[in-house]
Structures are given as structure tokens and as C-alpha cells.
Length: 99
Image (cartoon, rainbow, N blue to C red; front, side, top):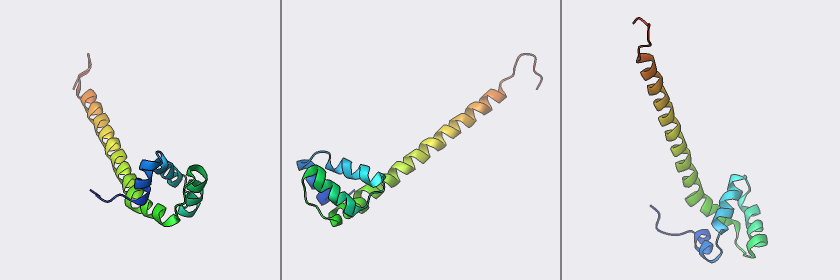
């Protein structure tokens, strides 16, 4: 686990919601330079594209990978449960059915 906070994470303490806004902008496909401009507009805070890009690499991308892995695991678990349920139903003898 990372111990050192990025500049964005440090600034998030002084400007609550900053990191979440940046995450949302990354999800929208907005570049670090454009995010720098948006931060200046919304938070009246001058931060260059470099700390924003570092936040993307060190924080946002790993979070997205973990989220994707968890979604895949949940989908696989759901499919396995459905398969087990279908097998259990097919193994039941219906009244009048000959096996």
C-alpha cells in the first residue's frame, strides 16, 4: 500500500471534493491539462497538469483496475451461483417424471 500522498490528495484535505472531481473528469476522458484548467475555474487553485497526471497514474488507474477486477469476480460468482441453481433444479425429480 502506498504511504506517500500525491499533491492532489494533499490538496483534497484543504479543498474537499477536489480528488473526487478529478476522478470524475478522468472518467469523462478529460486530459490532465484540461483538468488543470477546470480546477483553476472551480476551486480557484493553480495546479499544473503534472501533479494531476501523477494522481492518475498512482491513484486513479490502480483504483480502476481494482474496480474492474471486483466487477469480474462478482459476475463470475453470480454465473456460478446461477449454474449451480440450474443444476440443482434439473436434478430434482418432478412428479410423474421418470429418471
